[in-house]
Image (cartoon, rainbow, N blue to C red):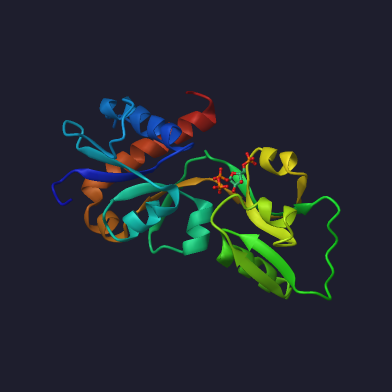
Length: 217
Ligand code: PRP
């Protein structure tokens, strides 16, 4: 917003609170954010920081276009949308994996085009292109596990965290594609030209993360 505050896009939802904990531990707390409300913007003028709750898959759009200086996005989103941002740090949280999953009895018939349901068409396309496997991508927006159960697809390419969703729907991981975790990202111009403003916050976050790894926190 060009008023000297650091604008931070946080992913709304299961990861968001944990991500905010790191910013707070880094000395950039904004107590009002803990209040239960539908507000989307919170700022703490004394610390010079403003937070927005953003849909996780939109964080990199806000950062790429400079509506936020920095943000936290999953590696899955960065691989899928290839936003033009700096990836500064692996926050070592939100760990999960991108995988091919399907029915336990699934056997690939390479004589047929493989039908793949996914929210991540680029990641899925790239994965099978490298294997020269011809696929038909069915782009869905959620509850991907339904697709093979209803015969809409043969397999899915999706995020697996605990594996519970797959298990409870009689599906299993068939192949692992890539590990995923939350990353701190920065707008390129903000990082290059506003480093005095943003650098200290990013350094403080890096120290909090390093401390967690050492077990000193
Ligand atoms: C994600 C993913 C799986 C589930 C995996 O969905 O697409 O469905 O989480 O987690 P698990 O291995 O711990 O069960 P999300 O909850 O984001 O909702 P969606 O179905 O709308 O994509």
